[in-house]
Length: 122
Figure 1 (cartoon, helix red, strand yellow):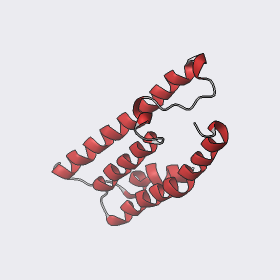
Figure 2 (tube, one colour):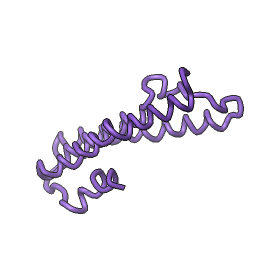
Figure 3 (cartoon, one colour):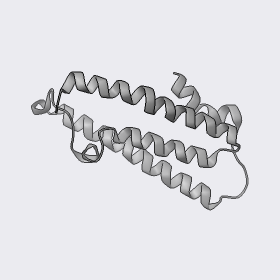
């Protein structure tokens, strides 16, 4: 919940930039599109993998997950960088820094520990 508040509610709380689109806006949009691909395509690939009964109890290491165990987390960070580029003020950027700090030092270590217990050395 706190991750949602820091990450998603920032624009509602602090507003957004206005004016003509700049190259920064286009870069932010490109990062968010890439992030969406990483996040959603990787989860779809994992879902297809887990649906196959031959893969019960196996760690998914195919598709985008062949490049990183937490490719969905990579997408999350790219999305936050895109948000930071769109931030109307530096204080809003701090929300995304906090969210990614929480991701890197709380959520990811918990996920790694869970995967060690569940999958061992796979």
